[in-house]
Image (cartoon, rainbow, N blue to C red; front, top):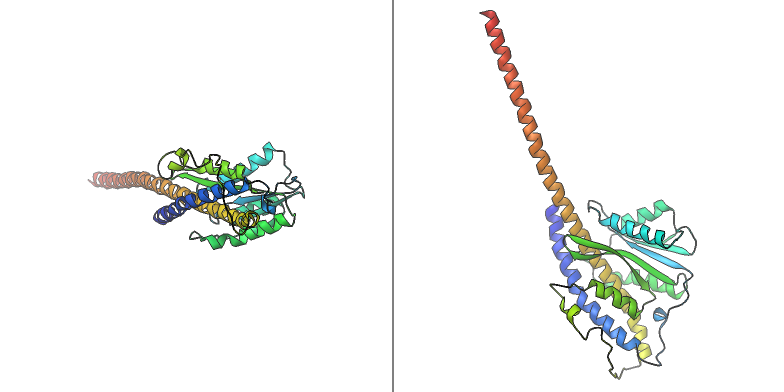
Length: 288
């Protein structure tokens, strides 16, 4: 299992890291367009009074991943405790991605409106469509006014951070904040953190066809899908990294236990042989 997890870890890390530049570029485009004056914003970009909130929990389908799933659940419980949220209040609904999240929410007896199981490791962009479409439909139909997502971001093979992000409504400031936290400060793709122009205010003039409003209306759902896709890739990389470490620790513990048991076995075997020799010697002495 350690070897399988290591193989999946390398593949999922590569996918997560390679998706980051695309997310950064989409964010910059959104920021530039959303700052244009006299452009009507689509529904997904409009903030409104929050009366209903949907909480999205992203975990794995399987266990044996160390503290991976527990970290997400603890982050969620910490959030609701700090904000005094009654999860059984009808104003709150829940979306589960992963069997562990679904089982946890069902055990809590809360209103699970959507559940997505077996979101694959080899996920493609189109595979995020059902999740994005369901969230967009719920937001547009006023089933909820905000979506808060709890998931795990990949930092290194030994570190994965459980975080909370606001997915809806889509805002430049919120996405900027989450992307800045995702950009590594060293190593691969760290140039985005060092770039002076990436998040700078830009006074650029665009000629947009057919119209800025139509471009934003098309871009907003795509941006949400990009965020969901990127979230799942980050969570998959974190899951396999955590499972690889957990299986390595299990292998090391099993080796240590095997060595300990081998010593105990040899001692007991030697004691049994010694007792048999003593019995034979004692018997011979008695006969003579």
